[in-house]
Amino acid sequence: MAFNNVGTLVNLNPGQSAFWSYSYGGDHGTQMATADVKIPSLGGVHLAFDQKKRKVNDGTTTYFVTITNQGPGSCFHNLQGGGMA
Image 1 (cartoon, helix red, strand yellow):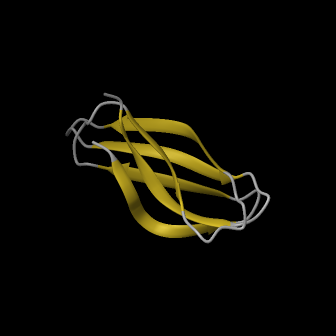
Image 2 (cartoon, rainbow, N blue to C red; image 1 turned 45 degrees about the vertical axis):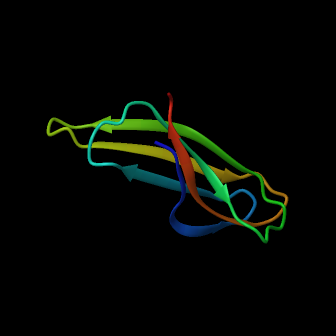
């Protein structure tokens, strides 16, 4: 299941990071999320890394990702991604 434009917009200056979590209420297998970079942009390059998954006994599954702006300028983003099909 692909998704775009998810979550509140976050502005990152070069070197800043944002930690995200998202959930579907159940286990949707392997999911990946990246920055859905917005325009206008001052040239920020957003790197998604540290993908994680947590599943608890009631079946609740939460996914996590960290996004860092590598510069050279600031930029807004929220999330886009989806499953490995």
